[in-house]
Image 1 (cartoon, one colour):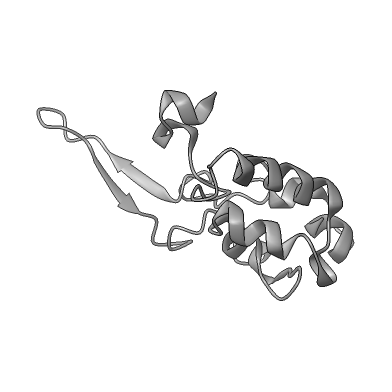
Image 2: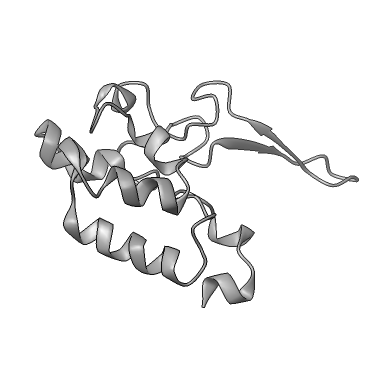
Length: 121
């Protein structure tokens, strides 16, 4: 939806592809290995944890950039994609299903490693 609205390549809006922050590779955090101790994860200073290059964050859909949309909970995103400039019926349908099964509290960009087994199912 972002690519279509802005006339650019969809790969820009993937944190695993062309639009990813080069400093953290789209993770939003930088991991530091401390050898004898547990590693430390710190928020990426370049993207400030938003996971995308600054040029990608200039593109908007419904008045929001991609990092703001990925930070939305499912319930809020369902409303966002349900009407107005950001209306995307396919996304709205999927988000409605997630909310119907009680997963409305998850954020769109939440890493899979933070989900429980039931949430992943």
